[in-house]
Length: 370
Image (tube, rainbow, N blue to C red; front, side):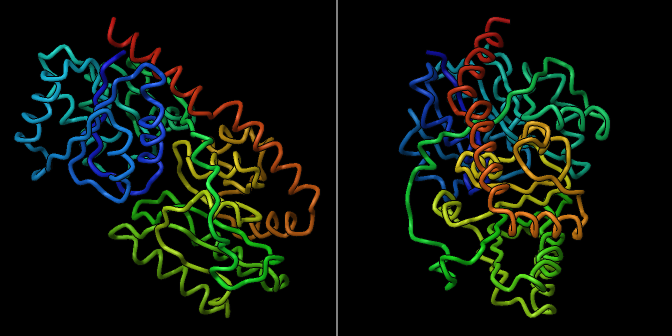
């Protein structure tokens, strides 16, 4: 078995952490002896503790923490780690410094849009120095190359995210019952955190629902996700749209949730209104559950949907175009069924955890022997 250290700065609920948890749960069966190290823990810590071969929590007290570097290095040497895998810049800097001279190779997965100068600077340093750069989509790789001015070709390749379908099989209470609506009501939903950077675009969805809801009184919208520091204004804008349009009882802000599979079971249509993406876990999960999807027409979401064949696409930031798609799916049962079936088949064929891990192990072995 190949010995791998996953270093994750935090274990809060997010797409990167869910992917890492799915990998962790299936690692040993795929030939990976996985050690998980975290600095800040989080809501998913109990789940990681259950499935990791060894789980270590060690604090990061400084942006670049020499003490953390020494502790990571000790783990690498003690456990004969061959691969150190990181998923964001702050993790990769510590992994790179800790692994020097140990024989361990560093793999860095790039998950999405890089918003600030500090992270871009860190990535300019890291990309040519880590042993393998993995991009979760071709669209993200192109964005790095053409928009961010970052090297997307040095020891780089695309590895799509993978989802453990077993995790989606859990059954929970009805979300419609929880928010007090009829089981026959049409429920649209978006699962995405409110970020300070221009990534997710909940405002366009709220504007679209306000237009759509004016003529469809039997429809509701749920927004699932936490509010990142600095994004309070974006959240307030969405609340204002609900208040100004008399929709406080029909647009439901439910915050961060861990019961995403059971939430998806209650949705009639999943919407992902985004300006930038890597390869969103939430959209793949919805497709695997057979829920018809409406997605922003950006390159990574075209990749998720088979170039738009397995989802309804709308122009990014265009609330009127999104409202049009929502009306169409509300009124066309056959189209909803068709999209749900197409999405399920496409996601199952391309984004399973088994496919992801088979390629990941191959990449690890190639990296180690290089």
